[in-house]
Image (cartoon, rainbow, N blue to C red; front, side):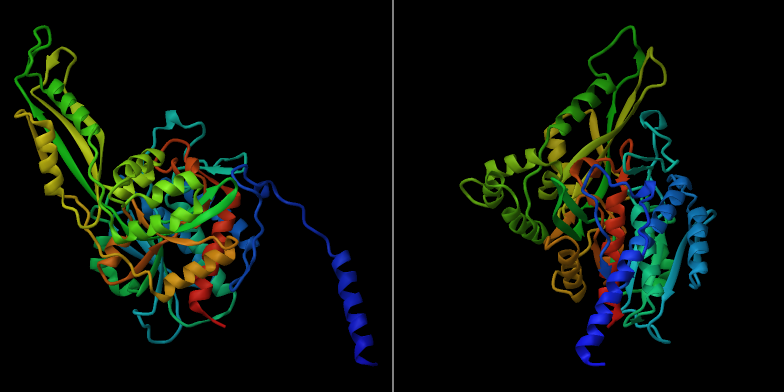
Length: 491
């Protein structure tokens, strides 16, 4: 039989088989989110992840249902659930105990008998979540309710979505039977939200040899979704430093029927009002400068004009006001910020208290110091009845991760493939992550929260009705699997 005839028969056979193969109808969970168009999972180096993403939706739902509100955390319950999944996949997960009921989890896909920590890739996400006021939610925050294409639940974005996606990417690599050229380590951490005795700092001090790595992928970045299209991927290479400061007002106590002008509550209220209106000066870090330089061509002409003018002598001050007013995130990237978050005073309605307190959550740009900021606030408040007390639980400034590393290049390449050429912009996150501690141990850590999200959905993090679009979650699983496979698999 000649070659042309053989090819004709082959093409005809493929056509017949394609016609006869059944197409499975979409499940309810596959209904596309109203937040973005339906997305199709692409063929990544780890294989087609569409089916795995659906498995991961189930893992995410079950993780949300395990209440790991911090405090107290109770992360061990989530760690045991993940350990069960990994064991079935042929891994040997290990629980790393930090306190009663608080255990992290680590598992490893080996590339060789002797590990090389300098080359290893760490996939890290935390299991604990912040608290909720259930009365303000439209659904049970620990029910993983699916509604209108979204999965609702505390931690759906921060950070159990990332946890489930990391798990999926880790499993996808093993199922692909690819030969890995570096160890890939899965790490689920504890106490990220409080940074206390079970935090990654303590985990490193006690168990660093279990997960030492040269590179890490973590939360902290973003995939910015605008008008149904990914505008850019923010690759977090640096982050702000959290510091809590207590403002304390003192005055004479007394009967509320005879008020006096030196009431501690009145003085505290006046101080907080002044602090709330304070705007710190703009300070461009290298990462922030590069972020805005690369953002400018992506925005409309008017906004782009002001972004390009941010650091100019003639228009810079006005441009900074315009940009800060346009987007709260941009404002936080440009300067130190102060958010009054807690107030406490008094024991009874008819007693003037002798003391009133407010908590300020400060986020410093790397390189700025809390002493300089507090000195400015003292001048601003100018009240002898007010004093400031810096709390000892401050974060640490870490050097930024390199924008020239092979891993950052891999993230950039994968983002372009996954999101139709969308660029990766170097990103400084306003929020703190476990990456700061990793960077202090010479890890090139990058935040790539992989889910395409609108600003409106991103703002639900730590807020009421936190939710994640299922279409975005599935796309995020695909994106993470692509990054991990392209960096760790030998082809």
